Image (cartoon, rainbow, N blue to C red; front, top):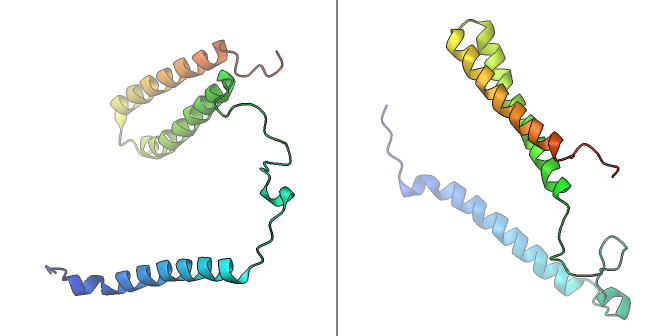
Length: 126
């Protein structure tokens, strides 16, 4: 069955989108008009986690932060690819080619893990 979609087929989606946008706009306007509007020195002061802001937002961040993120992505990607591989490898669909590809993949991941360890990411007390 070959069905061609007409613009009228998208009308329910457009109605729902319009209702969602309308709800957001009406809610923002209503809270602005109905809510209290009290100004004070304390309310207008910048606030972040109860600690006063000091310095510049462009201050350098320790490399350990980024290397920890790399470590997280490293293991996250590893798990994402290894589970389907293990399921299909158990059914003998991949054969030796799949085995060598996974060995190469694990080798590349271990190179990344070695890099992170050499940079000292796992040593928190220095």
